Length: 441
Figure (cartoon, rainbow, N blue to C red):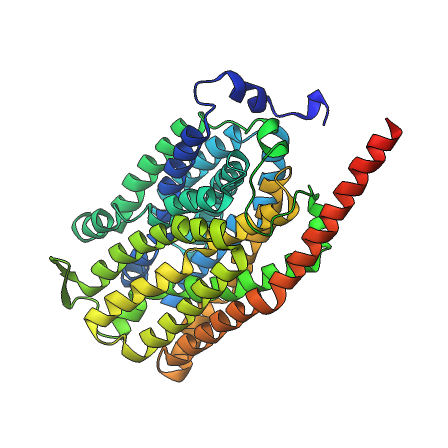
């Protein structure tokens, strides 16, 4: 790589007091926490919007799908810009767009306006998310699962502290005031902290001495990656896993309402709250904790074994929620189990992609994989349609559980042997290149 192609923030990282892996990780986590409500807080607004305008929940949820599609499918473009110019401005601009999106939601009075705001928010959130994840795996080449997990935890658990204030503000001041207040606050924090993001020095990614089990040192371009069957197997697995989780994220409030347990008081761990509020708060916490936990586990035992454990647990949890979720206490516990077994995909897949295809183009490559979340989001509105057609959520749950179990099997039966062959082949190629270079010398 020549000097003109090195991001400016790479050289800045060598001199800046912020150029420390842990400081960069903390900045990324804060930025991720501030955009979390755009996805995880959305479910609280669906019923109030429908109550005011009577658009229908399925029509309102199209906004969620638009948000996720643009949040994910544009990340490769944003990742390319990050790999070329550094992370700072992508996050700053992303924070501005996120704030604008919720400000627009506060005054929206038509479905097209909600859809447009969702598009703006999706572009902004995708820029922040993709940049922070890509930056984390570059700063921590030997602990990519843990670093990606902590960063993704900011997104998964970021709404945990604000889910109750948002619910309370919606009840006391209306959803419009809530959109504006939290939109401005979240956007401002992302902009301020985004200026502190720096690209990792090239020496970190080029001279890593410790990698996770099964990792390759080959630095594949995005074009090389998408030609590999490993990428497409992982893409399919991501879609299968994300579909069930996104359905739960977007539909949890409507599901609780249909189960007639949303406002039923639940007492657990010394706290008493309505079942839906309790479930949302607990889910956000567990959805955050699972990301660094399973990321750390995968650094130790390998990505595929960890995937199998987590994905199978998710399938069992969804099945149990379908059977037992009408009990308010079990609804809270089992929805927490579902989120705990789902959120780890956002640490396992980025770290596996970077382990397999290298860190040089990590932001772009992980961004391409992240588009699978957008593909899965297309299925979310059909959850409402299928539930309405069948008269219950049972079939939706059963399909989601089956997809999770299938993804668990694919991790061991297909992905693991594919990656093992790829790593061996790339290691042989690297050895041959070193030998040839030595001979020429």
